[in-house]
Length: 437
Image (cartoon, rainbow, N blue to C red; front, top):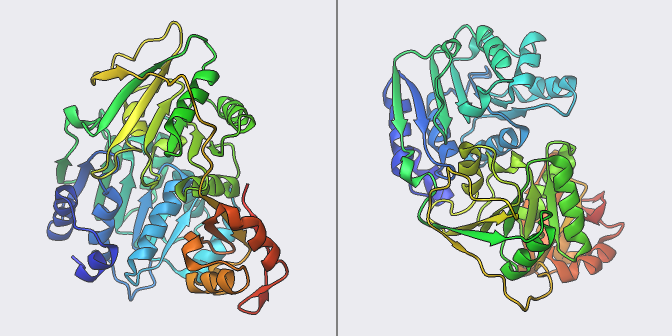
C-alpha cells in the first residue's frame, strides 16, 4: 500500500479496506464487497487499483460504474486527491456528450468513473477504446443492477470484451448478481453484519404529529435541534420543494436537493450543506447514497423510507466511521414505525419553549474562476485576504471546480467581502464574486 498516500490522507485502513486491498492486489479473482454505508468503500477499491494500473500508459485501463452523477464526481475527486499520477475523468448525463469527448481526447484518462447511460453513449460513438479496458468496478452495484439499469448494464458488458477483473461493492445485499456480469472465480467479503445495519451509535426517536400535515412538527423539531446538521428526507420532488419553501418562510437557512435540479444547483446545494453554510438539507433519497457529507448529526424521516434498504442508506448518512448520530421518525395520526425498524426507540419530547432558527456561522460565495484558469487554494486565500478584507481564520472549505470555485466564509463578512472584491482581479484576471443563496 502507498504509505505516503495514507500518511497524506491521515487515515489507517480498517479491516474491510485491508481485506479488499489484499484481494485486489494479491489474487487474480473477482471481488464482491458488502460493507455498511460510511465504512470507506471508495478508498477500499481505489487504493489497490491505482497500484495495478500503468500510469505511464495513455490507454484507458479501468471503468468504475456508479448509479448517479454525484457519486461519479465524488469518486473522481477522491482519486485526484490521492495524487497517484493517474488521470481520471467523470462521465455523466446533464451535459453534452460531445463536450465530454473533447475533454477525453485531451486528458487521456487511465480511469473513468461513469453512469451507465453516459458510458453506453461513449461506447456507441466509439469515443473510448473498449479494447484496452481490463478492470471493471461497479460501485453501489445493487442500485446499478436494479430494474431500469439492467438493459444498460447488459449493453455495457457486451461491449467490453477484454475485462480481466471485476470488483463489485455495495452496502446492501443483492438477491442475485445477473449472469451477464460474468463473474469468474470470486472472493466474497461480507462486512455487513445484519444486527449492525443500524449501528448502536445511532439513537432512534419518534416525534408525534397531531396533524396529517407534519410541517409544524418538523419546524418544532428543527428548532429544538439548534445549529446541528440535519437531513430531512422526503419521497417526492414536489414535497421537497414545498417543505423547503415552508422552512425558508419560517426563517431557517436550508439547502434543498433532488434529481430535477440542474447540475450547478445540485452541486451548490450539497456544498452549502457540507461546508456548514446551511445546517439543514431537505432532500429525496438521492442524498442517501454515495455522498461524502461528513458529520451529519440528525436524520429526519418526514416520509417513511419505502424499503428497508432505503432506511439503511438514509441512516448511513450519520454516525459515519466512529461518530454518533440520531434519527427521527415524524409519526402522523395514523402512522406507526415500519416493521423493519427493530431498534430500541424513545419518544422525543418537544420543548414547550423553543428558540428562533439557528443562524449558520458560515456562508458560501462563488468565484467565477477555477482549475482551468490555473487558480489554486492559496490564490483564493490570498485574494480574499488581500482584496476582500478577510483573515485566513474567516475562510472555511474551498472547493475548486474546473471553471468556478465555492468558498465558505464567515457569514457576517459576506456582504463586505463581495463589495470589496467587486471588479478586482485574481492572478491578473477580472472575476465575478457573488453569494450562493
